[in-house]
Image 1: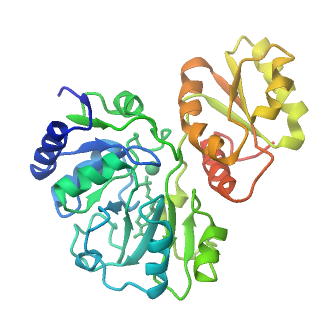
Image 2: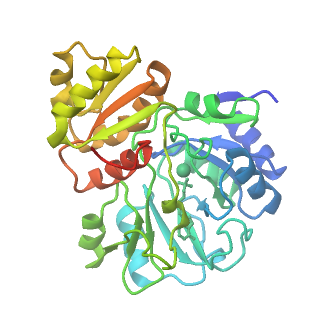
Length: 337
Ligand code: AMP
Ligand code: MG
């Protein structure tokens, strides 16, 4: 199968619509990362998404809809505070998990009685979702466990020959996946941190919890959080910023073993590595920049090095909770040195 990359136009949207309604899969841009889209009502198409990505079949998908879509078609209960969250943040990088009406394919939520719904703000995504006017499941358009894609080229690198069309909407400005927030209980609970932070949500609705990993034997609320994700195809070693010297020593040790090494760190640490003539990847100087560049740099790293030395950014709160969450999952070793 030939994989075409096309800019968003009336023609390419029509082509995308034809593919979707014949049970196929189309990659689409969003403001966070690119998604691999299929019709949420079409069981066969949803199955295809899991197969193409190699996604474990207990990791549920997010249904994407346009801003005027009638949510009552797919969700069973809409708590008043969820409406406040939509008014404040949507369209945008926030996914809300509602009680499901059970109308979409049961594969979407992997048997859970909830449904995750997102209204992306990317203009191209809105145009595509309006064109099809059905909920589109769109997990990140990367092979399962590989780094998420922030450009059409990244999608092509993972799925050339496997999907017919990639709608090209440029480089993603958000850079990390949406915040996933459960709205089935009394107060919102963040299941996956992202660009819409706990503080931002609490400011609108008064309270917000953040879900930490399941205790032994506990119920998993968001299966996706259990999987190692986002990993580049090179050895990745993570160091805290207090351990900068060890990171530099490790860089030198790996280089002496004739490994191709690079260092990924925030802008203010770059000069420490340049002093030893290191190859560096600059994550940026503020939260938005670091979120936007993270996946692009992890994909660049796997092309240019065998070993990536990562130094954690100093700031850990707000948007950086999302960035740190992805960075930790990207590192091959569970231990932070
Ligand atoms: P991705 O599509 O790769 O961005 O991943 C979707 C994320 O949303 C995963 O972390 C899933 O576990 C989470 N998710 C999707 N649907 C649900 C749901 N019904 N309940 C809880 N988490 C969900
Ligand atoms: Mg993903």
